[in-house]
Image (cartoon, rainbow, N blue to C red):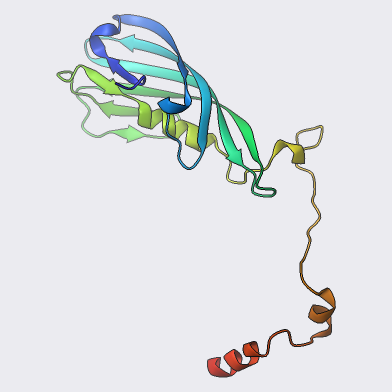
Length: 170
C-alpha cells in the first residue's frame, strides 16, 4: 500500500494533522528524479465529506537545459482536495479539487494529486543555479557558433547538394 493511500477508519473525526516523509521510491516523477520530500496533511473528516489539505516541500533532480548538468531544485506547494459522496461531476483547478468518493471502499489515494502539484512547480526552462546572479536573476550568456565562420559570411557554398535540392523544390 502506498504512503499516500489513506484508510478512512484511521482518520479521526474532526480535524487532524499528519506529517509524512517521502523517499524516492514513494513518488515516481519520470522523467525527473524525486529526491526526497516532507508532506504535511491537514485532514477534516465528517460523515459527508473528507477534506485533505496538504503542503509539500520536496527536492527534485533536474538536468540543466544549458549545460546538461544535474542539479537539485527545491519545490514548495500546497493543494486542497475534498472527497464527497454526492458529487455529480468532479472538478479540479490549480488550487484544489472536488472528488467523488465511495465510502464503501474505505480507502482513498492522493498520489496523482501530489504528483500533479509537484509537476506544476517544475519550471519549463530548467537552468542550473550557477547561472543566477546575487539577486536571483539569470545571467546573460554568450552564444557560440560552430564551424567555419568565414565560409558562412562570404556566401561560399558549403554543400553543393543544397543547390540540387532547391532545383527539385522549384
